[in-house]
Length: 304
Figure 1 (cartoon, rainbow, N blue to C red):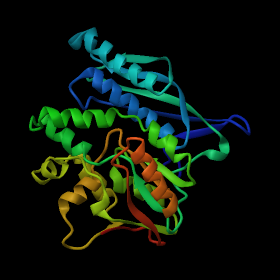
Figure 2 (figure 1 turned 60 degrees about the vertical axis):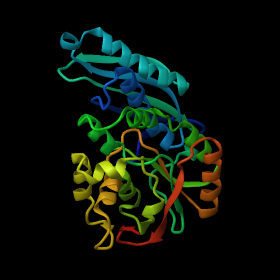
Figure 3 (figure 1 turned 90 degrees about the vertical axis):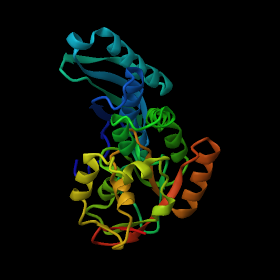
Figure 4 (figure 1 turned 45 degrees about the vertical axis):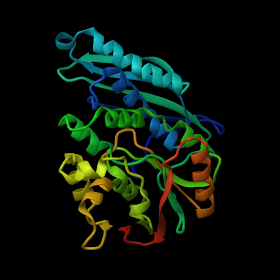
């Protein structure tokens, strides 16, 4: 709790610990099947971020049966189940309530060796930061609600959010990792802030190396920035520094709340270079080194 880590860990024995997490939210896409896929991938991500393997899950459902009927509910749960099968995770059951607004997510339990837990704090000075998915899902989803996004872009962002972090996590565990988190509602900079708060380090982000979704900048520049981005920026404004002429659209993207975003991984530069190469070879083509850790007792994030 003190470091806002991604999930809770309970040690069963010297060889086994449980990782437990839950997440649910309202629909962010129109198609209920895709919404189920995205919600499941998002819930599983916290297990992957801590170096664990998801094993079981339980559905969390709020649904307006009277106004929508059973069809979308079946599709949503089918999408979630498909993602769980892809993750080799067993669905044990769940709980549902009637509500005026649809909500869906899962509680997930994973396994990890107690000595191989990867927390969100633990970075060292000189470490590089690797991001495994591009940013911009919040901005594009906001524009989708405004009806200004073509079908191709909708499919691109949908598939990105529905993509598991499983392969990236499997590759990550082959290397000596200092810390890891997944990028979700607090945006890239908000989650970096959690990684360094209360420590003696800071972070420098080389913004031109941060992967962005196509059209995220364009849509952000015409005002499709979610309220969550402004809230994230206000909350962490005392930690983030940039030149007076820094592009405000890029700042919004760096604070953009992501749904089922990528992993942010810290490790030594040599390890980071090799890890990114492995990820590219395995099809995670937008994985990139985006910054590095500095000595800084004020815990600032410098944007270059």
